[in-house]
Length: 129
Image (cartoon, rainbow, N blue to C red):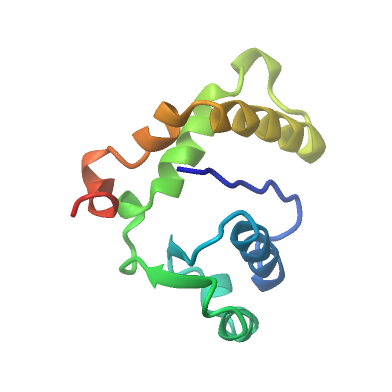
């Protein structure tokens, strides 16, 4: 399993989403199946147009509405919050981005941590066959 991440400091919108999708498909030699929530950026015209031009590379699968418990990203985010040192809280957005990148780069070298996000009972649907 390969983990891909992106830390951004601007608002999460369709432009950021397309940038991440482009980065993501560049890491794989086969089609990416991505599970996403129903955030407006994921459903925007801009994203739909980008996906239409890359349908052989990526396909989105939407989670049901109002179901954050099914989203492994929520586990990643809560892990980030727990892992950042409480004594060295980021004082601004730039410091937070540096801390997040540092943590995620460390996590990328720990495949058991990454696969653990998908072992939670409510996220098992991703790996169950």
